[in-house]
Amino acid sequence: MAIPALLICIIGFRLECVAIDALHTVDLGVASHIVGNVFWLIAVKKKAFGGTTQDEQIKNLDSDMKKWYARTKTAKMSTVQGKLTKDRVRTSKGWPKLKVKAAATRHLSGYALHLLTIYGAPEDEPVRVVCQLLHRFNEILKEESQFFSQRAKDEIAELGSNLCILYSGLSAAALAKKEKMFKMMPKLHLFDHLCVLQANEIGNPRFYWTYADEDLVGLLVECAESCHVKTLAASALFKWLHVYYK
Image 1 (cartoon, rainbow, N blue to C red):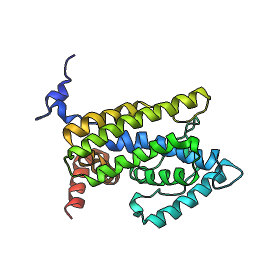
Image 2 (image 1 turned 60 degrees about the vertical axis):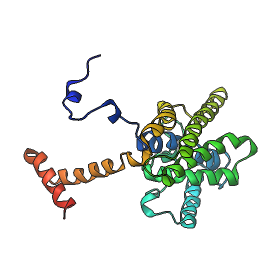
Image 3 (image 1 turned 90 degrees about the horizontal axis):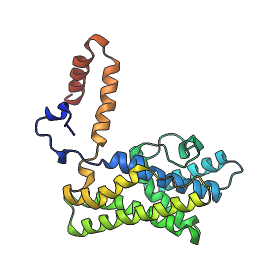
Image 4 (image 1 turned 180 degrees about the horizontal axis):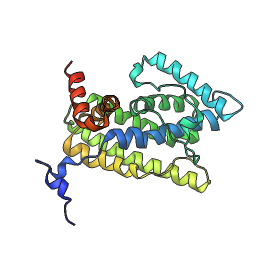
């Protein structure tokens, strides 16, 4: 297959430059499904916080989540912005998936594990272990430097494989019961490659995830909105440089 001409023109471009991004693959992918399913399981299916309707049940979950934030002293920039609603915990097609910012989802892995520890039943043990593995993944990224120790390499590889196997089992069990829970998604496969191969070869995903790029896009959007369409490119770049070096 011919290499696209645009890629050939990029100075220094190599195959190694293409990497799986933890923000989109994990925080907005695998983690959003896991945390969303835990929220739905505990708040709606088990009715752990009471409420006669699903809206009330999620509203009560939101109240408990805010108390957890206060107890754990979670930074405001890492919390869910606005109120948690049913539509933010479940998709329009009925599959649980948390729809909040990536950083908020990442920090909620600890809250999801807390919910399962307090309200989970013995039959929920596979779900709790999946949450525990996800939370441990985030801890490893936080604890380790740019290049993983051998211990971390071994742990994250085993962690990634086990999480994918357990999640696949939960998905198959839900499918057998005809329940819309633990939807299988392509990003689970990417997560396995991230943990087993990429993290071992090029290091800690925290050092090449795209959070900074996403912030830059948001800043440039604000700059571009104030520019005239005929001078958009040059004006937006000038204003961004002015803001950045101010």
